Image 1: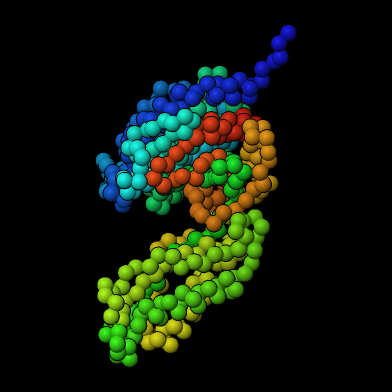
Image 2 (image 1 turned 135 degrees about the vertical axis):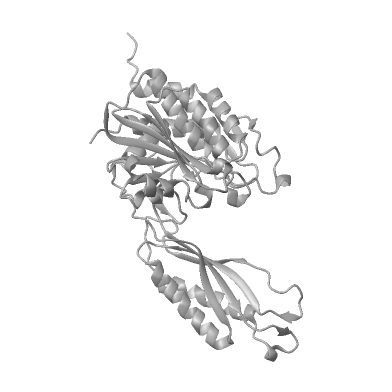
Length: 417
């Protein structure tokens, strides 16, 4: 008598057989640019319609569109899609959230192939968006397809959430949904967000640092470089402020081993051009500060310390310094490393990959933050090559299939409340 095949084994076998389907889904998605209007594109409309057609060919119990109005986008909307496959109980929902938008290709000469035409080379797929975030889009489709073809209903509802606008702030995507359509999410729902990870598949992200990008604008007085006493050198003043801001590391020294790196970071980054010639002292200088701050510290306190340093430089050099926020977000509450969604994910990773990763926090921001601010448990995970936003962006087909297996096991092991 042969061994009994479990539901998990049957589903995982189905997912393994979907290589050709996964490639064709990637091909179709890659061919449809979904770039934000703020980056010169039309938004996600065409891509959402293509995906919606694929979803309607499957056995979802409901497919719902939530269109965020945006006059700059094609047809004036930014579509978000929820596809739900009902479980034996609807007391909670197991969600997989991915995003439809992509960043522009950038310098075309750096691409070896057409960024909007899928290129397959062995087990690797190349094209804009294949990793960020189509690996997630397609892996979630494989899970639903396998459940449907195997006639399996999970214990709880299984829902796929495809959002707009992740790349430029989520105002028409996750943020729009949690503010305008909060009712679609239950208090006991759990969320997998495959929009971050590492090549080893060991990063299970449960917390994020606060983020603050400041534009620091220094105004002095222009003069000839041979007579500096006639002017006020905005560049020199700005440089002193850059060095003074290194003291932020001492002012906010806490460490939290949940995060990597474990402390807050405060780094001067981008520098704008000032004068075009060498022999002029500039009256205008702009640099940017990227801060990733542990949740222990309110951003207001960090800004007050930056202002204190700016005031001292103003007084010393006779300049005027303004600090303008380009992006700012206080960290959302973390998902507890002991939460059900984390335990289920870690156990599923162990089953697929043979190791148990430890939950970690990161310095970057993800759309999971919008869910965590509602008190919902969300975890960010994917096994990926980390080529997002790069030329020749790639997705490893084996990683895509493995992600689908991990999330399928976690979904099947989720119990009703």
